[in-house]
Length: 401
Image (cartoon, rainbow, N blue to C red):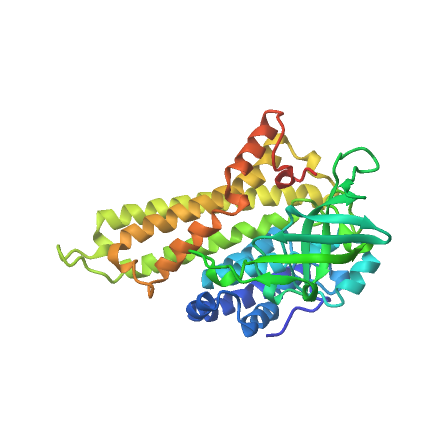
């Protein structure tokens, strides 16, 4: 595959990346069983993803990246998920390296990421313990759900900071117990082979440990301080935006699969063509309506947010409703996609239940991905609290640090 060059227009970069993702989707579909049985992405599949440019999506063009908008990133992720959810899940997570780099000193980021298609994985939740020492920190801990970590170059992990064994308070008094993100080379991380799940089985989202590893101060960051070029992607919520492309891509695949079956199947009990079946027609129409409305909500809120940020504004320049609309649309995409797949699974009845049916995997994948924080009630609470002037539990979903 030929990647878009830096000299090409942004529109060409976006179109080229999307075209390559769409071309790869059938290959991912053919290898979905292998990916699932492997429990992480085969090395050549990682390279196929790299060849689409997906891992360069969030890097600025001055870094040799593609600098795609959040909307274009999400379209690429949808296209990959149309082929395989686990591959798309790892792709969107690994693609966030360019976003994280915005919160690291540019000179340090250049040293850490000599190529704009390097991959970062890890869990941002502060599950680790970081003891302050001269020049940096000693990091120890265990983190779950390291999606794509086996093929990552760097691992980013959240941890609470201690000094002299006691909780370290932020110097400005803003936080009585500071937490940070710590970047560690993959070679210094130990993986725990415990990823045996219902769905997203090929994402390799295993636990991992880091044991008393020294992390230089310059390899740490917080989402509250931007060091790179100001941009719509240099925002605390940017790493979460395109994830909803995974459930949307799966739901679209399930709809197209079912519609294809409906055009040629005849009910064995009545002799009625499925294309003339009221039951089939209503189910498909309802699912299409739900999909179209959900997807439109995602792109409408995302586009409005991008317009404000690209014009030099901040997230605070959005209205309360506009700001809450983004995390609500992400959550709705996950939950609605699961509902669509479940409805279509029931529509196809026993044709869904064999492992050879893609419906079986899509049902398991959407069920599992809906257990991610981004699809949980904490997002609803955070958006709801913001709408009425309360305290969001997961403020970063709204870009609040």
